[in-house]
Length: 428
Ligand SMILES: *Cc1c(COP(=O)(O)O)cnc(C)c1O
Picture 1 (cartoon, rainbow, N blue to C red):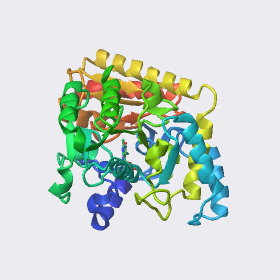
Picture 2 (tube, rainbow, N blue to C red):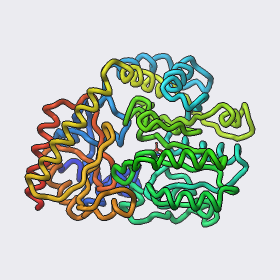
Picture 3 (tube, helix red, strand yellow):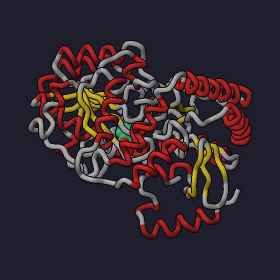
């Protein structure tokens, strides 16, 4: 496989854009290579500028649950674009997407559209603070909630990969209001809430942690979290930007049967266009401007193209047996990869929630940030180099979740498992 054009473009990009990329995780720094520049994508496949084809497990980092360039989404977008790309005034599309989402997420009475996951979490926290009149927030180590100040504390993903858990430029006075706890540690949560509850506005959590790979909540952990926050009047925010419409149609809250007070969405609800959303109970959301005093706004929020892609995506996802199919593709990959690792004699741990998953190169059960970090990242880098050569595109970091789409076929999975086996043997 050759990457001549990609390398040339990367050199040029580096002179113009910091690190040559518009989001740090896209660079291949963690695996010691240069990023592949993309020309186009269709279904489960992505094609680079040198003409190489890959089966894609990044899927734009989560949004493309239908696969790339779904004909229905593309056709609706073409029609929508001809009617105008933005009006800065309300449209029926916003109502339609809001209704589609609220029907499936009964924990939310009202929802506000924004342009990214970062905006969603940042705004939800402001609302929770306004609602409670308290300043502190609790988050969990390794959970990523976007790049807002105060949330970039032990924030997983790019931050973990690059070993800068606390970014320069975040004032200490902001980070001071962020309490960080280990994921899955009910005892620590209990003791902190008992001591600090008077100043805690909210707890924000990724119910399945997708930004240090894929870490599942232990039975009882989310239930305890729900009970404790309710008891002490703390707003519980589920950050379902990644898990929403992904681990189940109704997100992790449906999957685990927990009702948070607020929910953040993004990724899938934009169908590949820039969208985020936050919502919650009526009494909390009535705090949001212009209904209430908490200010939050956006020039392009509720953008007609973004709403159209979201509506079309959710409509398709609401079809019969869609999540059954996604689950069976996920299970097939899980079985195949476990088998490949066993045959190759490489110790791994594999975790999956629906169509998000991660293989860790460790012999330790991964339950939180600390145990995720036991993974052998040098070995992961070698695995990455070996498998991309075989036409399989995975995230260039150990600490990212992989994703499967509706477009992934049994044949894709077979090819992937074969490539994984060969790669594991090569790097052993
Ligand atoms: C991706 C992600 C975000 C940030 O969303 P952006 O659209 O990248 O700003 C926030 N929270 C979680 C859980 C995410 O996975």
